[in-house]
Length: 92
Image 1 (cartoon, rainbow, N blue to C red):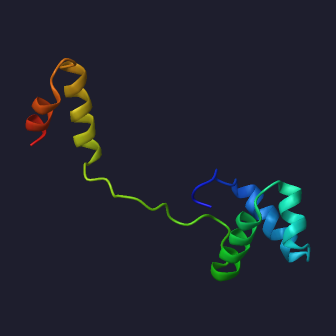
Image 2 (cartoon, one colour):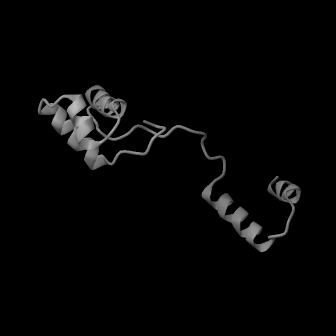
């Protein structure tokens, strides 16, 4: 599911509700016009964790604090024509 668009939490809850009512997965994915794998993974996550919300987003953690990001933005706005090499040395 990470590659496609995110499924709304209300839709996830409706999928789980229909699954608990005994409706087959094929009928559910046709109803919501979702891929079978998306419906299967939503149901699988719910049965494993008891929670319908999506998992944590993966990826590289931020290395700069919010304050550092705002300082960098302010500096780049003030010095718009600064070369990238000069920006790198300023950051260090």
